Amino acid sequence: MKRRLLSVVVPIYFEELLIGELYRRLKGSMEELASRYEYELVFVNDGSTDGSLGLLRDLALEDACVRVVDLSRNFGHQLAITAGTDLACGDAVVVIDGDLQDPPEVIAQMVEKWEEGYDVVYGTRIARDGESPFKLATAKLFYRTLNRLSDLDLPLDTGDFRLMDRAVVDQLVQMREESRYIRGMVTWLGFRQCALPYRRDVRYAGYTKYTLGKMVKLALAGITSFSSKPLALAMYFGLFVAFAAFVYLVWVIITTLTMPETIVPGYASLMVVVLFLGGVQLMSVGILGDYIGRIFYEGKRRPLYVVKERYGFGADSPGEEGCGR
Image 1 (cartoon, rainbow, N blue to C red):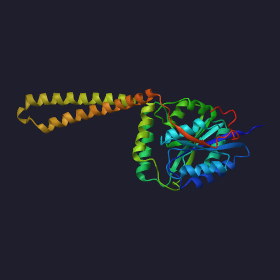
Image 2: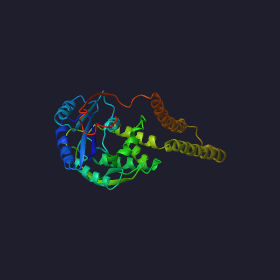
Image 3: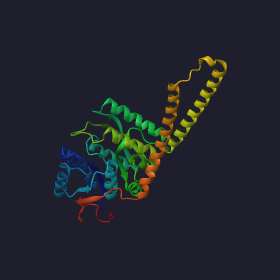
């Protein structure tokens, strides 16, 4: 009887300092499962211009279980994961970041949960070692804000580290929206899901590529992709400002009639009101513009990513037969 295949998808962006250790730990974790499963390691080079691609190609030449997908440029973390899941052939697909903050040793526990009948097993961070108080506070605020604004009940403190059954992956592959928040998309799909608590480690080497700007962009994608509440919030805020302005107008009229000597025409107060109302209007237009911008990009129907080269996807590779990709 042919053993089932496990795929591990790893996005890589300027990680030449840790690829050797990453491969060693992934290989060790998967070898523990090798008596029951075949496996493939799918590394996606997301436009790295350091030595990452060369190291990955060497691994693909030495190890028949290694696949390398080289994208034509940097498309971003979420699209690199998309490329990997599109090309992965496993009966279950694990997504893990390449910085070794998510321990590869946890994969075996995810497989156990999958064997119990769960279709999605997502890692939930009970601790985040080596991260600044600012990062911890903003991450906690983001997940809780997103949950309040979203129409879905999204898991808290959960990233992209997860195992997905083939049935889930097949549905995810059909979702081709430009603005991607994969952890939310998997939640939207449903199926039987469970959390697996784990402790997130310190980055093994190098530095994080997720700048504050990229984190804000991901947060906006998560909010606007799964909720129209910001539009309603802008409307409610506008109604509140209009009501406050009406109350202020009534107060000015009463004060003018009863105590006219206290009313001194002032440039400053007028400018405050005008600027405040202008700020509310610009904020509302900005929220609306973000939604319209996403419609604009979706309408172009461009490919989500472009693959430049693939290595290790030969006909004799595990899982290639009948993969259909």
